[in-house]
Image 1: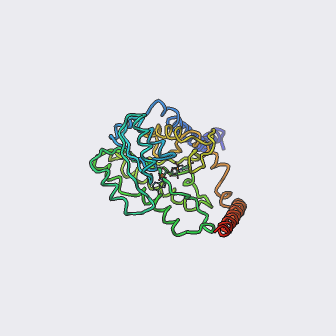
Image 2 (image 1 turned 30 degrees about the vertical axis):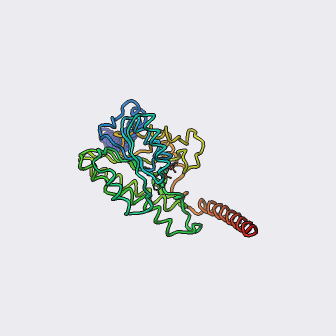
Image 3 (image 1 turned 60 degrees about the vertical axis):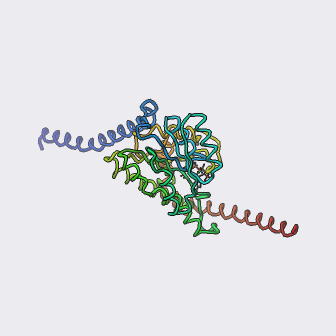
Length: 326
Ligand SMILES: NC(=O)c1ccc[n+]([C@@H]2O[C@H](COP(=O)([O-])OP(=O)(O)OC[C@H]3O[C@@H](n4cnc5c(N)ncnc54)[C@H](OP(=O)(O)O)[C@@H]3O)[C@@H](O)[C@H]2O)c1
């Protein structure tokens, strides 16, 4: 082989070796740019949410993430329709929004665990209003179910499915289609990013929310409708026993503010930089093979069983005391 041929081969091999390196560097640069845009530049480069329409419908609006979204939307100039089960709590939030932000409010009292029967009534309440945004963050009570310890499994399954799946897949998009523009924000969860044993039903319904939102977005974006899926990690709310806010756990108001900034920059988001970084770290540090292994799950099951039998003992003790006094 001549020296020239040898050099030519070396150049070709170097180029072949460099292709994946350059490709991965470009991919990394693209990811960094998207992250920068989604979580940093979005602070200064916000979409004017009023362009979607006058009214925003927010479910689960009496506490946690839903309430925080409702307030943020009002602060950004939208009138808000608040939806949840408790009239009393709805009135309190409505008054707070009217007093603080001077926006109009309406309230709809529904229980999403009731299934199909509620949607006609909701549609009637929304008739004639210029609905621009639908934000869905309601959550059934105790959605985390480890089946062997759940005393009323069938009822629980129906409740979680009605609340997390049926409500999200209603024909709400048609309302927005008639107007030719709109924004739907569906709150999924980190638990929907990967399978979570012991949270099986919750985790499975959240991956439904994620896929459903992504498919709807692909189908309707050309028609002027944006569907954004938001997948938080830990936010301090009733669901998480109002845990202390720190660099991992966001307050609901801060979370809603940052997550709303990402509208127009991403159709699937962790909602804030801290959660996006935690999600990346979890992917590396907690791979599926570890989280799904018996080695990882067994201690948790033992713990749950122990807590459950302690609760049962306490319950029996209370019942026996009651019988003595009766
Ligand atoms: N907090 C977190 O760390 C976290 C993490 C990941 C995902 N998420 C998701 O974020 C969403 C909001 O959770 P959150 O933490 O804000 O919970 P939250 O503080 O417990 O709020 C739940 C809301 O849903 C309403 N609600 C409960 N059951 C309902 C029903 N059957 N029908 C209608 N409304 C009902 C409640 O109001 P009423 O009691 O007045 O009905 C309340 O306004 C959920 O989809 C949850 O899965 C939360």
